[in-house]
Image (cartoon, rainbow, N blue to C red; front, side, top):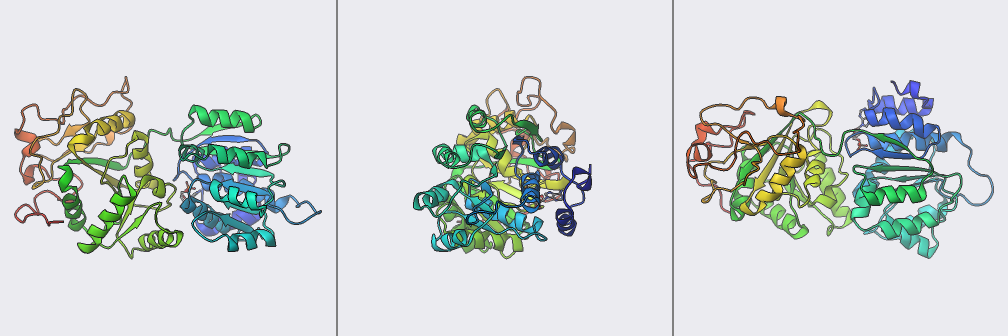
Length: 459
Ligand code: AMP
């Protein structure tokens, strides 16, 4: 299917061509025709699937082709709710690109910045509002926004909004919208019970579309695990980053404080680094993101929530400094690399106390991971993986065969691969503590060995 055959208007087609979009992505193919027909939609799609255009194009077509009501002051006709400021800003940017040949006055509404500009924009009159729920409630309370004219509502990343505790705010916002003649498009990576309830309550005979089940990641990603003592993670990270300082790398840390400390440490150690998390001001976050995108910094340290929705094409490497607490977040993190068929690396630094988390991740992914020591960072006491080994350890004496054949292969009982054990059957023996020549990564980068003679840098 092409964009033309979906019935998109010429003013959108022209903009899409200029953006270099040749063919619709699967979620766009499924969602756009239904949305153009006016159906409510429950769409299962993650960041990276092209979901923004999947709801944005039908929304813009509606605004651009249906005359706005004539009486009264201009009120928003479309509302997009997003969980984070970054996502709100990105959706706004994307829609500005798609609506280049339309005049759609719009406003982005989020917290962490002054109210003044937002109030001014709303007062001047806008057709489209892209908002985070909390700040939108502030505007509703001040009566600086009137949502009674909204014809299309989009809930973007609905699961994350609910995870972040926005359900009460969303319900308050929904209560201010017209009940009749409103189209609702709900996009979510997962469909837990609370999302279904929200849909039942507020949607009208929604059609369901779904791409990429939430527990799969691109086949082109190599997943690697480096066991390491928790207290030496920073050194190991620096060691890996220094091996090839030019690879743009997104590093995930669990806490805001931890990501700040880590970013400071890396920066002081000579790796150009920025951090992005909820305690940073909006300006700081945007600067960090644009510096990273432009290559002015090579490493971006992020927490899960702050990184949600970050749109970076062709990110070659993601490093989990800490494993995520929830296995699904691994998929969200790794979803930022290996897009559009490009190859990517997902590296996790795993300490003793994270073995259980790793097992859960492997079970959810249903695929093997390479587990390999980095020489100089071997654990004194190797990690006990238990019965359910998270993946295959590198066999001594040879390169690992490409693992594409394992990718996405379902494991019958949802079990982690069991054929090879990561944990040492014979502690201290053979494969786990093999020397650098036996541990070279299959991807060509040799993070083992090259620093063996010199002690890793101290943090
Ligand atoms: P999203 O899932 O909306 O965050 O989109 C992920 C990335 O894919 C963004 O950089 C979009 O600009 C890009 N994209 C979306 N749709 C298409 C398409 N049909 N062709 C090429 N790139 C696209």
